[in-house]
Length: 211
Image 1: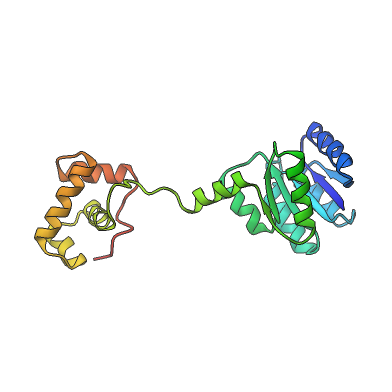
Image 2 (image 1 turned 135 degrees about the vertical axis):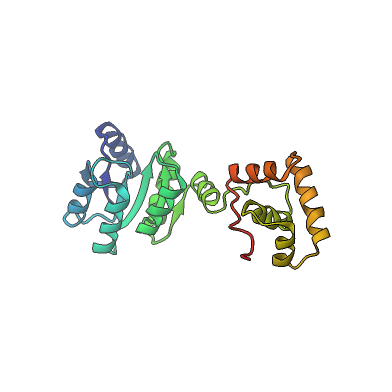
């Protein structure tokens, strides 16, 4: 297994190199930037690029995209401090075959290298949890039913009870009852307060059917 290390912190690269020596992994080159990694990937014949993502100049995501596009047989394992779901998704979409956070144990890193080298994909459990959170953020007002969410969304767009009844094919009385339930669950007493709470929580009517 031949590895190209890409990290802008020389002390961290030294530590990784020492670890890889213990694991029997050959470090064939080191890069301190994304630009250098792209250049070296063409010359060092590495099997895997261990890529930091947060670097000055060309970041690790763009370097990953270029390396994978130019060298389809080279695998990229992201090893970074960045745990933001957007960056995780960007790296995987760019072609990274694995994503670990710095602080991963020796056994975890070894297992990730083996999985990536064999053509598989590896994602640290905490990364997978972050991805799930990013893809499925918690909804505001979880105490509301789907029907109540629809009504609140239309209320936040300034719709009257009569209009809401037409859009959702309900009776006006049913809409009034739903609005009363929304007031109770949100702890408000007026329509204006409910709409203000909805807007503060980012509910702008996007989930409600268009009139």
